[in-house]
Length: 349
Ligand SMILES: *Cc1c(COP(=O)(O)O)cnc(C)c1O
Image (cartoon, rainbow, N blue to C red; front, side, top):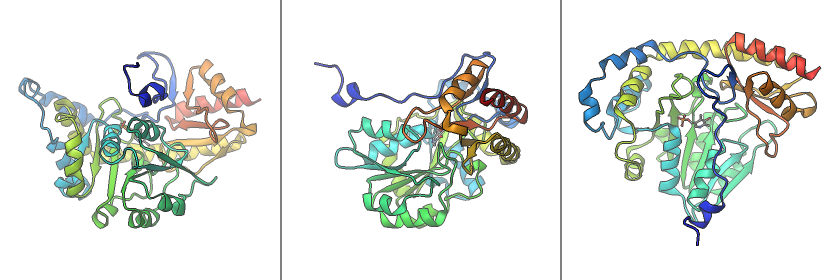
């Protein structure tokens, strides 16, 4: 007999993007981290850390984070739930809502973790293919009527956004939870935060990992009506966000100007990088995130991925249907992007 449930023994498990050891000389464009440092105000906040706040358990409701979200985004504090990264919040929703006979529905290709989390619950995954332009397959998503429908917007790996109007229609026509994963919203022209007021089944998920340059901190938040958050609270660890994360995270959220200025810089670099890739003959999908999905000439993606890696440049290659001829490239600084373009033009010659 196995020690483990059949599902666990047989599943593959999620493989995160490669994280080279600290100090390794690489240009890291594979996991969509922000190339700029976190807010100086966030780092400065560490000086206010006292021993007493470490001796005691942290606030189980991370109220400093909820308050910062509330005052910067105009939602009531009671509508915010903080998590150990938005990955934890995804896990809470899927654990609370899905299981045998309660399907998890999402368009494909998207964030691979959705499938892993659903599998752990023994929930059926209904994977609905995106069309080539990554417009949301609304009718099929509605027809599947999941206990949980997951929409990444901007989507990874395509960078494409689902409009608020489309998401509104989705939320109105399914009976389960619609979780809108806005991990990349800081780089986008529109978001769907306004939907939580109109729909009791909408949960918006955000993270400090991308826009705020704090992937190492592990902080995300959900915005939804209090009736939904009340149920998710039953599932979470009591002390899911530690005292240090709460302190730094609140300070970062309160420094919107710094975050927005970096996001603007990245958006300008994204446009330049896109133009350079197109010049080299790559197809590039229109992105509202801090990365580009791109198909090299001839679909020669795996060779380019390996060739770049040999030169110390990491990009993301997904060996899976529809993506194995493409690369997902995080937008770095202009200097990093320049080195990437030079390497790519050498490799495709
Ligand atoms: C990066 C990412 C997340 C994870 O965010 P964390 O807060 O670091 O857990 C969630 N969803 C998508 C689509 C992402 O790309």
